[in-house]
Image 1 (cartoon, helix red, strand yellow):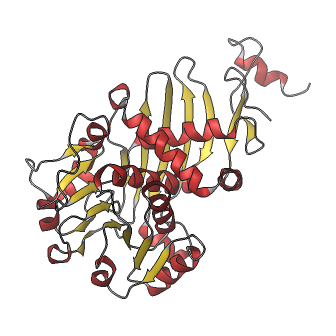
Image 2 (image 1 turned 90 degrees about the vertical axis):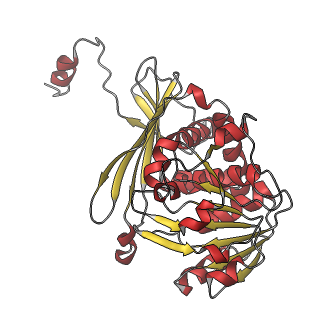
Image 3 (image 1 turned 90 degrees about the horizontal axis):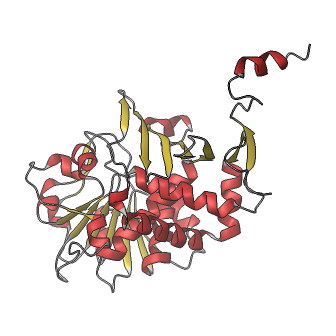
Length: 350
């Protein structure tokens, strides 16, 4: 099966079932490596994209957001929610779907689930940041927060950054056990930890991925030694942080899109003049990443639309000439483009 030309009414759709088949067809670690490379390639052409903070609708229990961008040839957006209380009802904290469209015609060329894909692209983005900011000899990861993101994060850092050992910690021991069991045959050395202090002992890289929609101090200043790299990816909306501000103050901070990070990331708890560097500038060589072995580097990752764009384009290319999609009848296609009404009337069959 091949992707339909964009001028036809049928639009390729990648379901959850087909996304999982695609991951297994490619191989999870290879998928993460290739997706990381795709994201990095788009960061290298960062100025080519339209950029704006995501459009949020906040409530007392969560947030629903739209994340759009375009490179002038293709347009993409993701619908995504964040509802921390969903888990107690057996629901996902984060769900999503995305669309990729041609700018020239406005016609969509891909619909895709993005619950699984968001986990993959978030992990791949952490790996890109770690590849550029962590010490090159980093081998041990502390994974703080062992929910739905955790296994993807661990495997992306293994595949892309050669991490060998993972220390797991979550306030819920059942989450840690789930993560440990899922990673049992991954080739990683897994250590279950009873406290965050135990988890970060000896860690070269620390990733925090917690879900509570509130200001938190998962890590305090006295816990963080020199030379570590931190991926703080859980603070992804206003009023939600994971690190004590003193950690942020003594770290070299790297961000995706400052206008979004300022209101959503760890950066929101700092004064307006707090220094930071945009990650794309490090990737292109316009700015310096890590400057010394003892420096603490912090990727304040809140997730940005360009990463979703990269993921959607990667999936579109990956499913071409496979059976891992279905064609949906999404676009009206009258014989005469001016006669939409006539098309509707003729459908009566009388």
